[in-house]
Length: 218
Image (cartoon, rainbow, N blue to C red):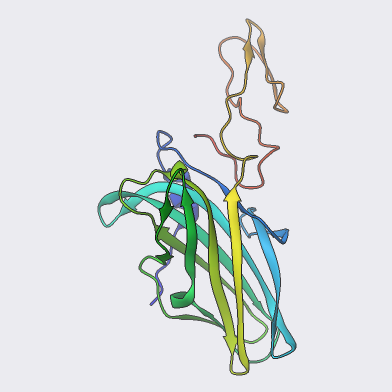
């Protein structure tokens, strides 16, 4: 049974006081998600026939409310393009986050939270699914350093199995940046913006290094 995840709103409403970590696939990064995140792209071949294409990405780890408790959650998204006339099935139960490496420890494998079953993608259609994986209690978003996502697709003719590794995306992780303030404005040597006027400037963080939506908090 699937439940709709309002990931966009979830990410934008998460408190700026909470830390967050960003991740990027370590291979096949040739595409973007519908929301602009860097995605790995795979041609799906089953029984010698190319049946479609899949993109996989992560919008990172963040603190959110899970069943009334503040927990760290990892997001993983998929876009499944079906290029045949029959159904192409994405099995949520077989999608696992494995080899979860933390800072000095390794976590147990994770299954999707509150989602199960099979996403059926009809012939010549595109299916989208967002999954969230809840980390153990006491885990902070930046405790994770890497992980792999095991996933598979199926038709009556067979299965396509893949394991996608992820690492921390240093280009989008927070780094302190010197900003020089003056009575007439400011200059950020790492950012594309100039600002003039009195008082303090806003928007000191450059957006040109990020693939995803602008990030206004850490």
